[in-house]
Picture 1: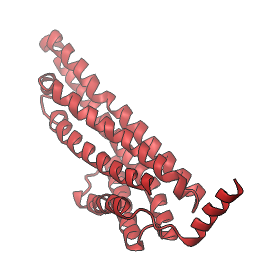
Picture 2 (picture 1 turned 180 degrees about the horizontal axis):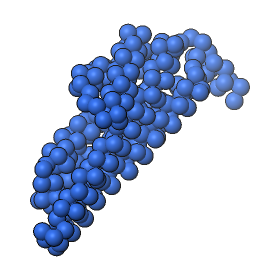
Picture 3 (picture 1 turned 120 degrees about the vertical axis):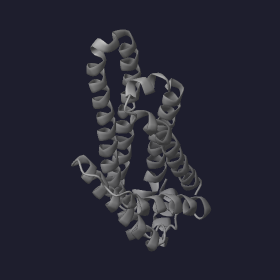
Picture 4 (picture 1 turned 180 degrees about the vertical axis):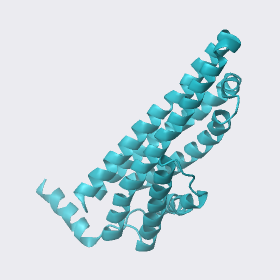
Length: 228
């Protein structure tokens, strides 16, 4: 149960770091005079990027801690969930190159003056679009992998089935939202709500109660321990 509690804490670390980090970065990245905004907000940019990096590391920690239990119930789905979280983390870390590149463009903009300003502004806008594209891809990967995760939870009853159902709805909504964003369409923020509820309730459950291991799984673990 110790691993499950730590995973629950990491869920909160991941969510909190992402919310605060993106809350710091988004206003900077969406300014009309983006290169000027980046140049005058270096500290905020580094802090926001560091928090998003913590989020990326935390999701891998969650996958590592939960994988030993999940694979006892469905090895293929458990592996799929593990891989999806590693991929999500890698894509999020790559996306952080964007804000760092904006700093370099901002410095060039100061030295280039008005002659190269339009060109550098275009590069800055493309950098922000790429950053957002990578985030949408990461959320798409997360939603697919987490649907596998919720499937294991539902079939195994490691948590109450009503919680697994909320997870299904949440990650299906995230999948729809990410797909719409990748297609260039605006998705309603309400699509994030079920997933947000799941990622608050699940870690609370893990910290307080852990997984409800079924008798057959417990017996299997005991048998393996005896043979070893």
